[in-house]
Amino acid sequence: MVTQTAPTSRRAWRRTRARELAAPFGGVVHRRDLRAAGIGRDEVRSELRGERWVALGRHTIGIDTALVPEAWPAKAAWAVWETGSGAVLDGVSAMLAAGLENFTEEQIVVSVPRGTRAVRLPGVRVHSHRVIHAAPVPGLPRMPVEVAVVNATGWAVSDRQAALIVILAVQQRLTTATRLTEEMNGRRRVRRRQLLREVFREVAGGVQALGELDFARLCRQYDVPEPTRQRLCRGPRGRIYLDVWWEEFRVGVEIDGVQHRQGLAPVEDALRDNEVRLRGGPVLRIPSLGLLTDPGGFMRQVRELVAHRKVT
Image 1 (tube, rainbow, N blue to C red):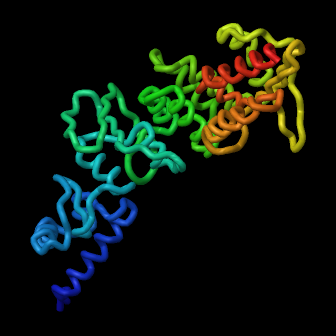
Image 2: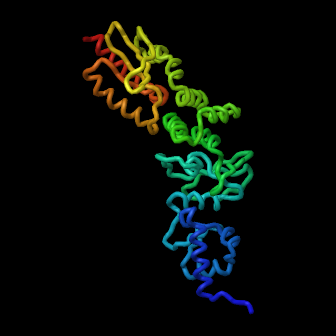
Image 3: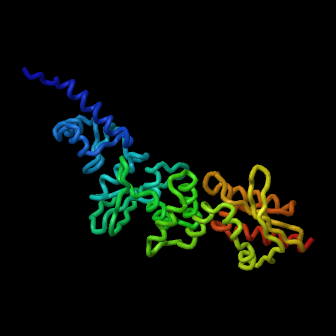
């Protein structure tokens, strides 16, 4: 005798199973995954007609009628599934899928194989590549971290944002400067190649990178007298910095290397703190990354410091 599942038990089972399938994606599920789990097309249509589930495109089902794909990762899943065949997360979106924190982006970025007829979706930016090799990881398909980081720096709105993307990726151990350098060197064309080379060196080099910093060149570029002394020093609690001094004016600059702190916050703090120091003390502090992301802002402060001492 064959035991048949009662209709109410079947409904309860499929709704529970659908919630389980949708949980990793923020409450949305692909129709394909529902079918693979044994939930047929007729059953999906029944839930949609009853307004218990909602169709969010050709492939995406929201299992909560109040849900719209606005939050991560639901929006990312919707973007990948609805954009077109072979779509993968790319740029910052791929980095977020890999675990990036403390960075937000309004648009979801996906890439598709060249020739794909991509569906244009609100809030989704689409790029095409001749060849796409998705990372061998579970979950939403995405570019490998190194590929995504270098792509993201090219799409960044400024050099500052490009540097921040690299710094966060390395500080949060999503990748290393060595692997990023290998990815960049393997490409014929890279936007901001010189900036990336310098940022990679900064986040990887530590003391060596500080020792190689040509601060005198920056002084010449920004019409500041060249310093009379430039040397590496070790301060309290293991702090390493480049000590720059103008003997004639009795003023100096201390340039800090990359520390294990989040993003570009030290750069912003230093610009603000130096405005206070300019009104009194003879020494400014500059994070080395600040000379890459905002050289004009910091060298203006150095020029003002030296000019003030000339007058007094």
